[in-house]
View: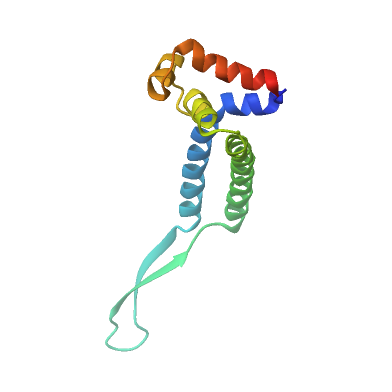
Length: 139
């Protein structure tokens, strides 16, 4: 029998992908925030005292430390979700036939109805669903 964990990961696949995307956006935003520079105008030390634009990192080091901790938390969550996604992809990769891989991909990843899967692959809703159920009975 297929493990309950992989069934759960199959059912959650789209949510996992969405969370990975959200986490990537947050990580990108935090990394950009860490790189904020302050800018000031000044002048050269010697004559002709030409105006100069200075840029420097002006973020409080304690703030940087907290941002780094938050970034580590987000990266850990992303890693956890990537592991789940990879388990599903590995499971699909190990299915014995292309047809079965497509049935699982259409059902769980694209979230098609049995009717739509049957239309694409040929057959009836019942025949496609039975193929799917037989796979679980054999395992």
